[in-house]
Image (cartoon, rainbow, N blue to C red; front, top):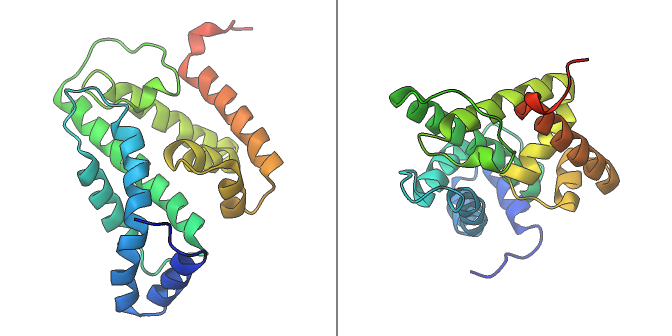
Length: 194
């Protein structure tokens, strides 16, 4: 499907917010490909024995987004940033259910990229990433949002800066600082206890 004209998604989001239910019907085909790209990014990192399918992740994220009709979507990037947040929550919920179904051995240090693999063995790591992001959000809310937009949403620095209404340079700094903080939080044994 071709990229929709600039502003069309934002216009439909506003119309839908204002009560135009037909706008929702026109919106879905325009956002589906982008939601699919975001979902495939995560599912592609999963091991072959995982059970979460791309379509299930897209559908669940879409249902959560549609359920937030009262939310005022500022524009297309805002919609997809919230979509990234929804996918994060879905993946964490899925990981928690897998983890509770099959308790694994001891925890080990993980990288940020490894933490998104949702198999029974990786569920604890995704939960650890979510807990670290929650802790980061309490300390540095914008840095946490940058991680959600960039890592979970696949947004560019420019798109993230538009969503968060800060400069691209600020997004870059926040991204670097958040990654360093998360690496430390996920791998505490790699440092000295001074």
